[in-house]
Length: 240
Ligand code: NAP
Image (cartoon, rainbow, N blue to C red; front, top):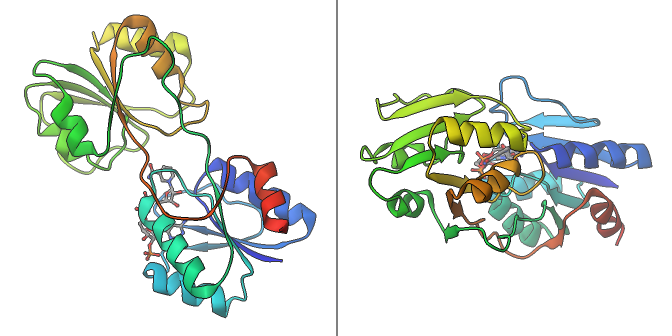
């Protein structure tokens, strides 16, 4: 089958490798923003399609028979475009998304919908570990009555005010390191997206153990698709 994978995640690369080995004709699509992306097996195309209409046109012209949305849970625009493009082109859409984290018993989570809501939920004087990435960063930095340790993989382009410090690093993170980071910076609040997966989950355990409040930005909603949460399930769903 000719399969298009909307990628940019480790799960998308795993799926591409498995489908190529099975003998499918796989193209992975990457947004093209990362400077040196890890390339998946099979064909790769870089850059946007020009909205849902462009993606729909691509599906038809390339003869794609299955579309997989294996993008990051917070890449909401491309995921919503995938839903519309699948509906207009008639190509079945499988959404491969790692399961969300769930609040363990005894943990102190406040769940909000947006970065703006998360920023507003911080009390004055909070010492914040901010792990929500580049999107919405300005909303948080506007809170000059709080202190921020902003953990990012790549340095931000916007100017960083004196009440914030950038910590550039790359997952995975261990429980021991997360606890040390929280203690060293006297963190009172952790602000995070619900990315799921094991690579960045230790911060939640560390927060719970150290009595740090968690402000969790919930996942966006995208619309209907065949939802699966593992590469194995995706392979089964694609064959139907
Ligand atoms: P987004 O806001 O949902 O998408 C913005 C636009 O970028 C889309 O409308 C689309 O342009 C283009 N685009 C996004 N993903 C694409 C893909 N896989 N192939 C082709 N075009 C794509 O996306 P985002 O949050 O900026 O994320 C961009 C990419 O980075 C995603 O592929 C995602 O899997 C990966 N990623 C994101 C995060 C995160 O936290 N958001 C974390 C890790 C990896 P057109 O409308 O022109 O088609």
